Every structure is written in C-alpha cells, then in structure tokens.
Length: 255
Image (tube, rainbow, N blue to C red):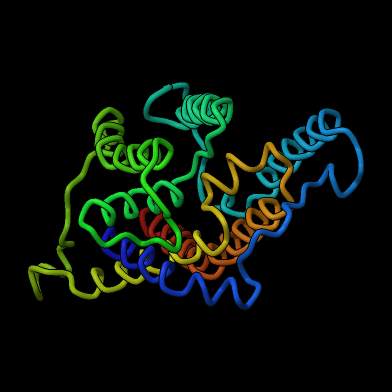
C-alpha cells in the first residue's frame, strides 16, 4: 500500500503538466462561501457550524445500521466511542496550531513532500510538484513519517493490536496473499492520485480547509460521504440482513 502511494505521487508528477494544460489544475482563485455570498466570515462560520452539528445529529438519527446492533453506553476514554472526542480535540488543536503558523496540515500534501524530499536527496527531483527543499517541505515530511509509529502506539494503547498479515483462509493456499497485495497496491496508487488531483485528502481538504468555508472542500466532503454511504448500503447491509436472519433462526432453534 505504501509503495502504491509513492507510485501514485510519481504518476501525478508525470501527468501534472497535462492536467494544467487541460485546465483541470491551475492557479484559479479559491472560491469561499462567504466570498460568493458577500457576507462577513464570522457570522456565516458560526451558522455553518450549527448547521453541520444539526446535520450530524440527523444523520445519526436516520442511521439504518442501528437496526442491526444494540448500541452500548460506555465512558472508556481510550477504547470506546469517547476516544473520538479526544482525537477530535487533538486534531483540531494541531490544525489550529499549524494554521497560525501559515502551514496547511494534510496527509496527501505530507506524502508529496516526503517523496519530493527523498527525490531531491537521491538526485532525481520531481520538479513539477516539489520545486525545492525548504523548511515547510521538511516539516510536512515529518508529519507523514509519524503516521506509522502513531498507528502502532494507538493500537497498543487501545488493546486492539493485531498482527495477522496472512488470514487463515489464505494461509491454507499460499503463505503470501497475492490478491490482497495487488488490490492494496492499486488502492494506494489511486488514493494518492485522487487526493493530489482533488487538492487534498480528508485531513487537508476536509478538516484543515473546512474552517475557511472553501466551496471546493464542501464539494469534496459531500462527495466523500455520499459515496461512502452508498458503498456501505451496497456491500454491508445485505450481509447484516443475512446475519440477523441467521441469528433469529438460531434463537428459534435454541428456544
């Protein structure tokens, strides 16, 4: 998957001039909601924040997955749902800190910076997208380098660390899960390409850019959630229905 991400960055570097020529990429003026509406930023930002919270509550209320599970109430700040609150405060604080220094926090940009830094160090710079090494590029490279140890530490602290590279079903056939490796590789390639062409990933274009009331970020996040909901409905809810039916049958047999 990591190799796929790097290949995606290199592919983006190769096609970037063509994308600029075609008008897909360029230095167009960023569109903001308050700029288009011609209203002050502050009141609109507060109103948008309230609307966003209302939207989240409505989405939770309408969540069809609730039919399939019994939600338990827990206040474990590390292992259960409340860890999202801690993660949200930490992420918001770091984003605010970066923004105050004129930096833009995003993992796709950090990946681009890391690949660009390494390419300069080995003498083959990808000049189209990363013109030169500077303090900002090195800072973003550090961000993406911290993801892997951070993920391991979080998994260990939460008690959910599991190392199972080859599932039992694959292990009976081959010790190397070739199909999974190919799928994850191409997922990495298209993930990097999509994030860079789209101008940011969920961290950059959503969490970091949303406070600017960027219309592009709103379009990106809307597309992201709509596709996610449709995919969940197509793939998982049918399985859940079968699971519930099987569970009812087993309960009837037990009774």
